Amino acid sequence: MSASVEVKKSAKGFRFREGDPVGIINQPRLGEGIVRYVGQLEGYDGYWVGIELIGHWGKCNGTLKGVRYFSCEPKQGIFARIQDCDKPDKIEDLSPRREKPKRPNMPVFFCILQ
Image (cartoon, rainbow, N blue to C red; front, side, top):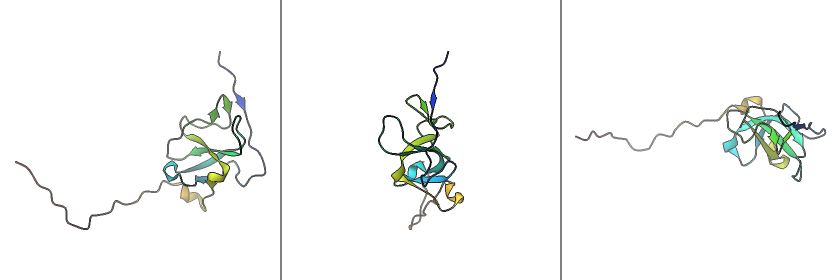
């Protein structure tokens, strides 16, 4: 028999809504994702955003301490304080950013050792 999980719904009246694209300020390694929950978390102060990350690994599946705030694949979700979140201008911003490797300014020589 499995334990029951309490399910929470998002709060209304915030600048983020479920389905909005979102980025995390000062955490570029986490990339960006989609808002899946907005509101309070039991046992934590303030307001939080539940995010399903796109193309990056998170820490959870939308459940925290036995409470389901949203659903996503395992290790694809995170919670971030609402003040640490930012709305990207366009949905295309959600694609992972990859910089081309820089070429060295000096020539590179390969040596074969005998």
